[in-house]
Image 1 (cartoon, rainbow, N blue to C red):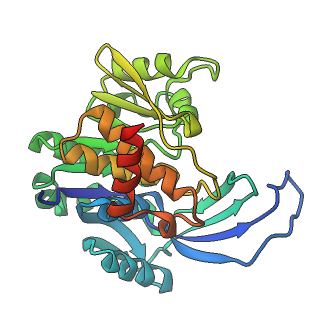
Image 2: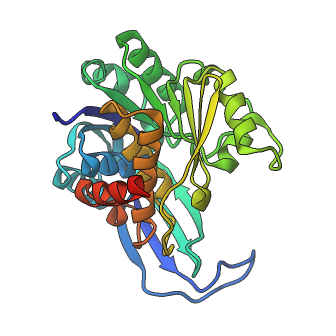
Image 3: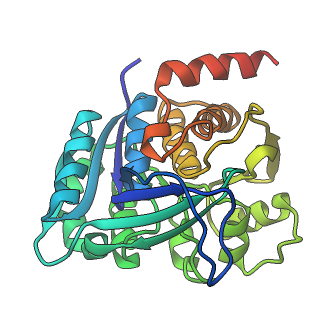
Length: 310
């Protein structure tokens, strides 16, 4: 099978991670392990996830003219990702994320977006040719909303499907117009509830149905160890993933989105695509770091086959 071409438009960061026994409360200092530096940013994470899962990936983004930016571009190229549309911002530093992860794999993250905030509609115009030739466009919310809107409009004109991972979670109502142009949405439970202004007690199926009613073709609502709630049209289904020992959940949502993009671009059904992506995410949470944890296709296929037999 030919590798599908996926365009990822989004952020790139350098992640600095410290493992701690427990996450601190406000005003508290906790001792942790050695500092780990690795490539990150939701856009770059998803680009790497998709490339390792079997796609030819083009990344559209912005980095600063600094050590972190140069390292980001070099890392993407090592992953065989096309960086033709990665712009260099001389007036802004590259994005940075500060991360703490506790003994249960839960995390706290703060992001200084830097050059990611400078990705503009003009950059999307420059990449229009690549978008028009893609099998799928993958987006997140760490770049300006007007740039996302331009990307969705460009893809829709070309008939290219769009998948949005709506993270970090936006305020209620912020995505109302954007949702109507989306083919696929991959929120977690908290993100989905925030998008709709819904109660945390509302069922995943109810929330997913409401997102479909807002204009999204299919919703993949991720539920951690409980699997994925998939809704399209009048149908909702639960798809379970493999049970694993969680080490670090940083990047798990990005891994799911990147692997799902590949599965959908390859023509898998919604159920099989969700299962494939859940298997990829389950592999990712067993290893430290965002990009270092992202699995290759052979590993995903092995777990996917085992899961499909059960």
